[in-house]
Picture 1: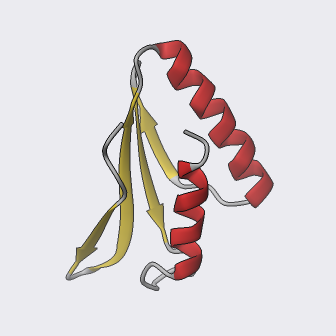
Picture 2 (picture 1 turned 135 degrees about the vertical axis):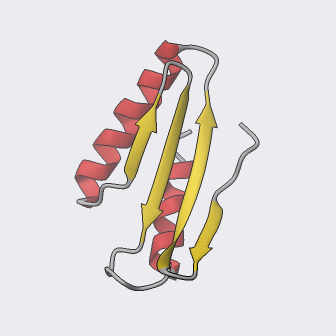
Picture 3 (picture 1 turned 180 degrees about the vertical axis):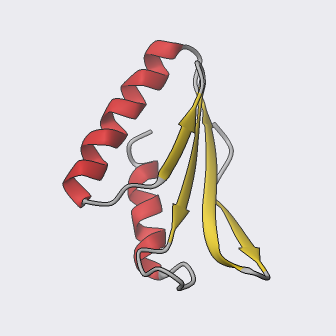
Length: 84
């Protein structure tokens, strides 16, 4: 899992962060998704998530709609990293 968060600015959109995580099997993937779910429920914040059998894609947009990514958003991303 050497992929890190990637900032994605667009001229007509707000900046967001993306990260892809890859796992060796579905059980490991599911374990991470369960931890991520619990964390997001606690924080009251829910990034966009897509996943397959051995991967998870996370897209994190600013908490303040229409604003660029802030230090708080980067801190949230770092907290997600701690779940890996």
